[in-house]
Length: 337
Image 1 (cartoon, rainbow, N blue to C red):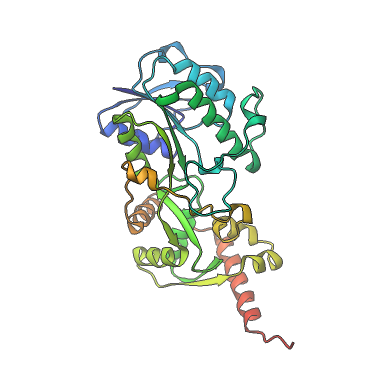
Image 2: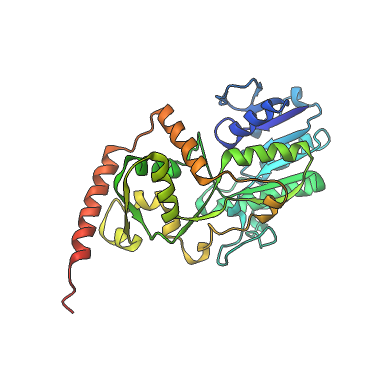
């Protein structure tokens, strides 16, 4: 059976490709470059989705897996092209498509971001932090309208694993595995919700095999950063000690605060995004998504980082030491009032 992956050469698409091929599917890639670097054989057709799809792709597909649709215009073109020649359209959306995260346990029925300004617009809006979610919601609408019950909409949360491009999880695995005192914004009780990309990829293949449709949050189990820190220390076999620093203190006193808060965005979320890492993923679990242990995820990432030679920049380590020294000095002062 043939499966077409649109995009797919970097992170989630790469893992999906590996799992599909190892389960006997013939995998085709359509993208602008030969970006797939895995060790399974794929058929490649070069092109830019914004310019349309070549006639060679006009055949029957068991599934179209769209990993790189950001604008409604793109989805209008791809769903029109493949509507009559694909059994299933799998669209990789994001939990960011929700209107907000003021409440914990946001489920698939929760309100999406407003899409009226996006879905009917055939001119792409600028892709920014503010427009990313509404654009994803608008793309979902296009896919669902075209494919109806043959659409599978996946809303991943924070995915981590080998070949991750974001780098936040990479930073913590490498830094904690180095041992010593480690600067951590926030507190040990704050949660981060990560899902292993390999678990997601494996489940996507199961969905294709069973022609599963519908809409799913694809998120991991909640884990406090204190527990996460401990688990990574254990996997890295190091004596690491967290130094918990107030995010506001960082912002007020250090010009390099942004770097560390980017690594730990869960520590400084605005009120409207307070429960971004407490999304309800029970529907996907009910329908077959399984989660490996956090230790397994950390171990696979550490192995990957060793293989690619990922190291924490010296400047970052130097800034970290300076910040912790200042934090230690100020925390020991006695307020005369």
